[in-house]
Amino acid sequence: MCGISGFVTFGRTAYEAQAVLRQMNRRLSHRGPDAEGYFAHENVHLAHRRLAVIDIAASTQPMTTADGRHTIVFNGEIYNYRSLRDELRALGRQFATNGDTEVMLQAVAEWGDGALQRIEGMFAFACFDKADQTLFVARDHLGVKPLHFVASATTFAFASELKALIEHPAVSKNINLDALGLFLECQYIPAPLTIYRDVSKLEAGHALRLNVQTGEIARWQYWSVDYQQKLSVSEAEAIDLLDAELRRSVESMLVADVPLGAFVSGGVDSSVVAALMTDLTGKPIETFNLGFLDQSGRPDTTQSEHDEAAKVAAHLGSHHHALMVKPSDVTDAFGDWVNVFDEPFGDQAALPTMLLSKLTRQHVTVALTGEGADELFSGYANYQKRVAEEKISAILGSSGSPFPSLLAMLPAAARKDRLVKAIMQPKAKRYATIPNVFDRALQPTLFSEGFLAQQKTHIADYAAKFYDECNASDYIEKIMYVDMRLWLADDLLTKVDRATMAYSLEARVPYLDHRFVEFVARLDPALKQRDKTTKYILKKLAASYLPEEIVYRNKQGFVMPLSSWLQSSLKPHVEGALGADGNSNSGLAKRGLFRKGALAKLQAEHALGRSNHAGRIWALTVLEQWFQCYAPEFSL
Image (cartoon, rainbow, N blue to C red; front, side):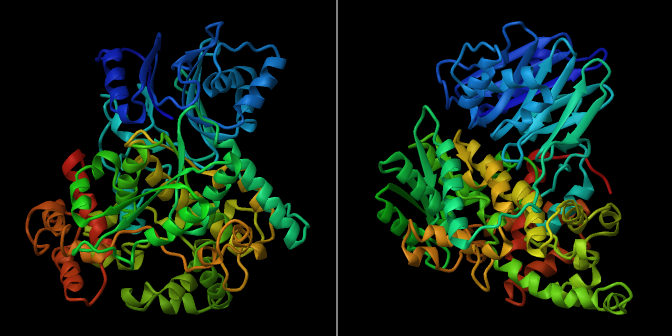
């Protein structure tokens, strides 16, 4: 696991290229504390920070083929690198190392774009072809690893994280107010947007090729999921196939020359992964969990899952490490938030994930996690509700129905009702994404006129794109796909990558091996959601590895006791960001984004118990923290 950065210049520059490259690279030192490396050829500059996981003594980067033609900087892990190496050797390719970096390099040198069809893993890379004068850049199938870039008439620059990219003098820090509106709508910024107007995220499953002489860019999507080719198997056969496929994925992710462990929440997703790790290694593994303490120092049983995680650990016989977090621990870590998440990011689970990662890194270098299972196996009760509602909205919201026009006349507060919104929207936009912070219907009552004028898109527009892109026939699979491309890629995986890499910890996600995702897409959707049972087939499999009370207990999210902490340990941060009454000419109130009095009203409603605005207040607080740290340029 590593950090990568680099740039290509077109024409004369007013800065010293190597000094800029070193500064960019050093902003990624947390992603790769073990080594740094640099490459320059004419106008092409590449840099790398290394976290050594495989082939520790060798595999330094940037890495160049023996003939000097191809040079790569690579972040990630290729899980099938051994079989690919054998295939490439049979084609005459020679290897000087035993790691996956050289396999990736030789695969691109041998097959070009076709390498992406053979690679299994998580990755972001840039490979320079000196003969063709091109830079080939790609991001993994599901978006586990990040890649940001800028393309202008004078410069093409890229980096694993924004904090490195904005070190380049040609990269503008002008803010994207449309992206900021999306953050306030759904707590994250969807790709390809970033908080900076001229910076883009390379989307999951996408690649680009840059001509380093002309600056011309070709960009394409190289992978998508096919839901049409369903397996014709019995339930028992499907469970056996699921066991084999998930076992294969987990086993492939156990390849490392450093210690491994697993995050265990006490829920079924991570617990199955830990169980398979135990079974495959034949020995106790290291497991890690985090729980919360209340103000009096007692475990907060309404939020923590530490007891359930301990039961899983005891059942598996793992070496278990539990971190019980006090409110003061969160307060102390809050200052690190914007250094880790270098664009506005409101997922409150990110802060405890950072604390858990810090604990885990004291014992292992790699941790397997359970991310992705909910989006593959219908793990959210929300999906079942949406399918039931669609039976109503399909009729009342159909073409020619008078209801959409009539409902548009309702007050904003009434129009935020989930079913009302669905009826008013075309089918592709009815399901947007799970978080809903500042609802679109309420934005005109909250946002200033100038800020509203900058809102060109809403999260439903992105959802519609992915809804139409998905070739599933069943509605529940289409909305799961929307979440896989939005909520999973831009929230959950962003959270895990930044929180773990902040402490030089590599996170691996067995449910998001793209071959496993393709397999799950071939299963009958009735095996994923059965009546009120979410993740039906995964739970059937889990029952052969885990106690039933773990498998079938109610789902609980990994979130802080936010409401109570906002009134106690986090209160100074809230008041510093929003002002004690939301009316002061300081903090967020002075930035012109909100109508006068809107923030004060929000705080008052929450303090008096009229509405639970905890998630909104949290999003606003981290936004102002970000403004204070990065001071971006913007005007309304």
